[in-house]
Length: 232
Image (tube, rainbow, N blue to C red):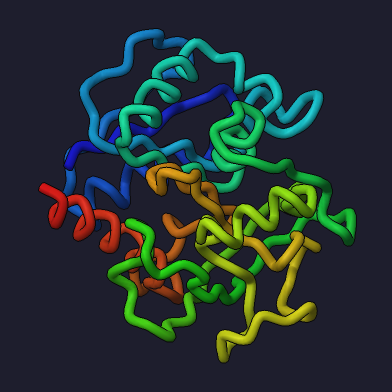
C-alpha cells in the first residue's frame, strides 16, 4: 500500500508521518508538495498536522485553495482512503470533504498532552480491526480543536456512524471531564458518509513506537492496512 504525505507551507508533522509509514509500517511513501496539480499514484493520502500557511485567517482556510486539493478531492471521491490529522482535519473541514467546523479550544489555550479515546464506530476501515473495548491513549496538540456542527449534522453523524473516535476517560467512559477542548459530543474524529475519509485531532503518528510512551496510533494504521487487504 503506497502512501502520500501532502506538504503545505507550515506543515510540521509531515516528516513524522513519512517516517512512521516507512520505518514502522514498512510501506512505500512519498511526499506530495502543495503546489502539485497532478496527484502521483498512491493508495492512501495523509494530510499532516502543523500550521498550513501560518493558520492565517483561520486553520485550513488558505490550504483549501492549494492546487493539490483538486487531487485530494479526486482521490477521496474515488473511494481511496484519506487521513487528515490535526491541521489536516481542519483542512478537510474547510475543503468540504468532512462536515462541521473547528473553533478555538474552550480554554482559549494551546493543549498538548496525552488523552484517551473510545472507538465510537467499530465498523470503519480505521477502527474495525481494533479489538472491542479498546481505549486508545494518543496525544493532542492544538489550539483550535473544538469540533462544532449544528444539531441536524450531529444527528446525521450519529445515525450514519460517522463518529469514529470520542474523547473518554481511561475506562472508555465518555464524560465532560474527559473532553479536552469542548468538542460537541466529545468528538475526536469523524469520517465522511462513504467511510474512506477520516479526520481526527489526536496525533496517531506520535505514538507508534514504544519510546513514545504509547503505541496505540499503530492500531489505527494497522486497521486501515488490514481493511484494505481484506477488500483486495
